[in-house]
Every structure is written in C-alpha cells, then in structure tokens.
Image 1 (tube, rainbow, N blue to C red):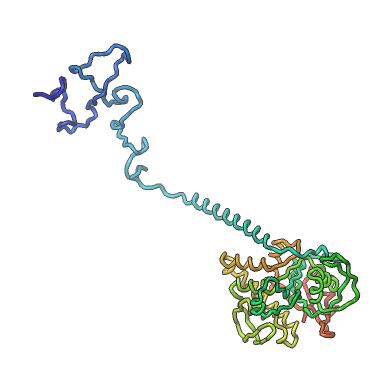
Image 2 (cartoon, one colour; image 1 turned 180 degrees about the vertical axis):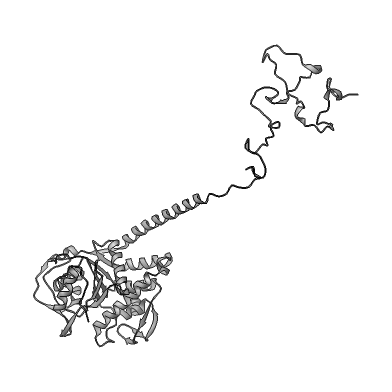
Length: 428
C-alpha cells in the first residue's frame, strides 16, 4: 500500500535528494511544505491546488525564495557561506576566519606609544612641579631689608646652614650631638654668584668681624640705629634672623643679595640619608667630641649623622673656622654629585624622598621660585665639580678672635661680581 499522498509517488518524485533517495543530486530542487500565495492575494480567488490537492511548494531559484522577489536568499546557489562577508572567499589567503591575520601597523603603534609616553611625562612633570612648589617654606621677607645696594649683573644667593633644632626630639639632639641651646645661630654662610662668566661660591666664616648697621626689626618693624658695634657675623642672625643677616652682609660688602636659602641640622641629615649616604675622601682623620666626629683617613660613605659631624667640626683644626668652611664646600660638592647621579634622578623611589627631604628642610625668601632653586642647585654642583670657582672670603688677620676681611681684595671681588666678570681674587 502506498503511504505517499496522491501525486507524491516515487515516480512523480523523480531522482530527488533526501528521504530515502539514493541520488547524489543536491536538494536544491526539493520542495518544502509551504503554502504558496495565490495571485489574488488575501480574499481573492484561489487557484485550485495541483497534484491532487496538495499545494505546490516554492522552490529555491535565482530570484529568491519560491520565485518571489522577497529579499531572502539561502545562499546555496551563490556558493556563499554564512559567517563570512559576501564577496570574500573563505579559506587560506582569502581574509576569512581561516586565513592569515593582516600584518600589524607598526608605524601607527609606535606613534600612539610615543604620544602616550609624552603625555604621561608631561602630566607627571606638572604634578611634580606643583607638589614641590607647595612644599617650599617661603618665610623670609627681603622687602623688610632697608638701604639696599643697587642690583648688579647675575644673581646672588645667600645659602645658610643654621643650628636650628626645631622639631627635633631629645633623642635626635643627642644622636646628632647638637646640644639643646635655645634660639638659632648660623654654622654655614655662603654667597653663590650665578652669572654668564662663571659661577662663584664664597664661604663667609662665622667668626668674620662685621659691623651691625641701622636696621628695621623683622617682627617689630622698629628701626634700630647703628652704633658702630662690631660682632661676629653669626651674631647678626642670632639677633634678628635672616633679614638682619642679609642687611649686615650687604652693608659690609656692598653686594646685593637676591635670594635666601636656609637649612637646619635635622633637614641636612635627612637629605643625606634620603640619597643613601654620600661618599667622600677624607685626607686626614680627625676627632671632635663636640660634634661627634670620629673619622679615619680614606674614602668612605657618610650617613646623615656622620655628615653633620663632618661639616660642623671646627675644634679639631688649628684654623678652626677656615678649615670648616673648606670641609663644607667639599662635602656639598660630593652631595650635589650624589643627588644628580642617574641612580637618584631616574629612580622615583629615591628621587622623590630626596626632593621631599630637601624641600621640607628648606626655608627660602618669598620671591624664590622653583626655577631659582634649581638654578642655585645646578650652579653649586657645577662650582664644586670644577666648572666654577670656590673660595673663602679673603682674610687679612684677626682681632679679639674675630677674623678681619682683606678690604682691598673684598672690594675687587665685589666689583667683579657686580659686573659679572671672571673672579680673579683668591681667598684663604
């Protein structure tokens, strides 16, 4: 008995692929059970179904599905495989999923990498600038200094190392051998001239004999008339701070001071420790119970405590103050070299702690910018590295324990600095 519907006999199906067929022909011509639309459309006259009541099924042809141009195409009769863009062959070399990947655009990658690095560097630099600028202690007001000399060529910095113990615990004072004296005095005073014809660093011995001139009190605003009183230079700082010290130096030299920078005991030691110690060669060993110094001759690396003892020691030398200023210049040269080495500058884990320690410890004048501070540092590095001149103030003798400046040499030195000329004067 034939189970196929009328008109669907084996003979009428012919050699079709599928449902028991052994034909190797593709199924492209096989009908599917769909209701074929009639020309009349909905509600129109219906055509009689052929093949014994079974509607003829639409077929795949070149015009679309079932001969209607309805936008649907199975893709079988075009050879297109779903999942790959039309018109692009699939397989090796054809750009499909099975083909080779396109070569990377290295020029584009390098360009965007460079842009990213430059942007990151710019952002980091700007952030570092504002961070560093915010840490400066601009506490010294040079506008309070009266009767100032005329400005010359170049820039003159007064660099001061004070014995300030502000913020130090009793344990710190004992460790650093600073004692517990009240107030502040200056252990180090240097004039750094930065100009176009070479930079010059001049140490001013703390025992220098100077006259205290008429000055205006930094806090009271009261004018104190000069009486011709002579004192050691560091007494001016003890009497009325940085402003009187600047006024006294300007009065006794005739040289205008443009900027002021000061660092205390604790800050100095912290900078040395932050940079990882400073290597220095000591020509002759010495001891000093007052500063805690105990050094053997030879090359060695000093930590903060040892460095402070090295630059403060004076009782171990015959020419106590003059030898101390030479040691200070020598150590500053080594410190500047250590700070500027690639191992510090290119290592953020060392650079930022060093910068932080230095900026926290510095007290500068109100007009000092980071640019001025950087200029001062690089000039010091250059001078102490042999690119400039370093010297002591010329001394002619002493009186009552005070060192007398050589007035003729000092006048020549100041004239050369004012005119930004190469310094020809030598110091002690």
